[in-house]
Length: 284
Image (cartoon, rainbow, N blue to C red; front, side, top):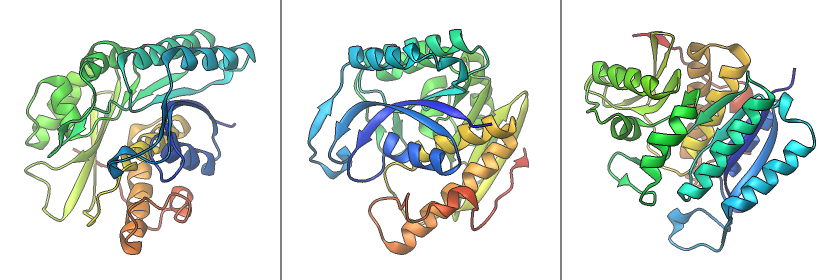
């Protein structure tokens, strides 16, 4: 059975962030992706300059309504959202989630709550963090924050594994029953490693991978999409965490070896299907 995902994110023509990072891995794994772009830029904003337009919330609603009019929402398995340019776009996304769930109550909403990162702090517009915390996440089934976002959303320090687990439980209490922390560096984490943490149904699993000498945009968008796909396919956060972590590590390893400033989404595409190294999710 083909998995269908409505992915509402930004788009760049050069490079891989937002839908340009999430869509191809999903397609390479065999998913049908209905991409709704919230912006169209020449490149991601990390370059300092870019060209293009931010699309309005009305356009997003109009496109989703057009998809709905094709009568296909009953076979939409999930909605995926990432960076939200403003609260109006966020409201349009939550409205889309409602439309999908009305047509298919089994559909999942995976919210990647893009707010900021360790060392950078908050980098989204004022009001977006609060919208994610108060509106989007209560509507979500799956949340994929990084360590900074997990701490901000729950108002908790995340310094130890116990802190991370407590914060994940608190986030679950806000709405999403499944939480996947996409990057975690706590006191128990070796200096040469990075970890990911999955929480669902009262259980926790940790995946530890070697730290790579790389920092590129778009990796978070890709791993959120990968986790969602494998959670839909296998029905288990444990398998989804291990599969997503293995693929993203292989992708980033290839990118680091090439010295590329953009993740090699196309060149390293076999990592999505058959990761070169498999990591396991251990109970914790």
